[in-house]
Amino acid sequence: MDGANAASAASSSKASSLAQRLFSAGVLIPVLVGLAYWSVWPVALLVAVASTISLFELYTLMRHGSYTPRLATGLVMGLFLCAAATFQGTVSFDLTGFVVSGSILFSLVLELTRRDRRNSLDSWALTFAGAYYIGGLLSYYILLRRLETPLQGGWLAPLAIPPGAAWVYLVLAITWLQDTTAFAVGRAWGRHQMAPYLSPKKTWEGFIGGFVASIITALLATPMMGLPIGYGAAALIGIAGGIAGPLGDLTESFFKRQIGVKDSGHIIPGHGGILDRIDSMIFTAPVIYYLVLLLTVPS
Image (cartoon, rainbow, N blue to C red; front, side):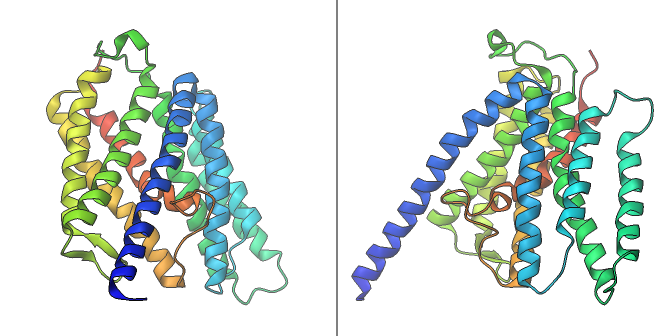
C-alpha cells in the first residue's frame, strides 16, 4: 500500500472509530439519564449488571496473563458490595463494613477448602482486589443516587430532577466530556506523550483539554441543575474529576499492558468492552462523592 492510500485508510479508520464511539454514546447516554432519573433501584440494577460484566472481563483478562482469579467468588463479593450501597441506611449498622469483613472471611475460607493451593495466595488477592476495584468503586453511583440534599432551583428546575440523579448526572457529564475533549484535542494537537509505556496515544495536550472541559462542565452544571454548592466548590469538583478520570483510564491501561491485550472485550462498538468504557467512571465516582459530602451547602 502506498503512502497516500495508507494515510487514507488510517484516516478512514479513525473516522469510523469516532463514528462508532458517537453512536454508542448516543444510545447509552439517554438510557443512563432515564434510569438515574427514575429512582435508585434501576441505578442499582444497572451498576450490578455493569459490575458483573466488567468483573467477567477483568478476570478473563487476568487469565490471559496466566493468573487464576476465582470468578464466582469475585462476582458474589462485587454484587454484595452493590447491595450494601443500595440498602445502606435501611439498617442500623454499617452494612458496607459488614460486607467487607464478610468478604474477607468468605474468600479466605474458600481458599482453605481447595485441594490445589499452589497459586492460592495470588488467586485470592486478585479475586479480592478485582471485586473491590469494580464492584466497590462502581457502587458509589448508587450512593450518589441516594443523596437527598435539596437542589436550589436551577435552569432545569421545571424538569424536577431528583437531587441524587443530579449528582449522578454531574459525575457522568464530567467524566464523558473530559474523556471526549481529551480524545478530540489529543487527535488534533497532541504532540507530547503523557504515559508512553501505558498508553502511547495519550498526550499532555489531550489531558489539559480534558482537564479544562471537566472544570467548565462542573461550573455550568451547578446553575443548570441548581446544585447546592458554590462556584469554588464546583471548580474543585471539576479539578478532581479532571485528574481522577485520566488516572482511572491509565489504571486499566496498566492492567492491559501488563497482560499484553488491547481491549478488555468487544461488547460496545468503538469502545471495546464494558470495562474499557467505564475505566474513568470507576475513579471519578468515589472521588466526587466524598467531595460532595464535604462541600454541599446544608439546606
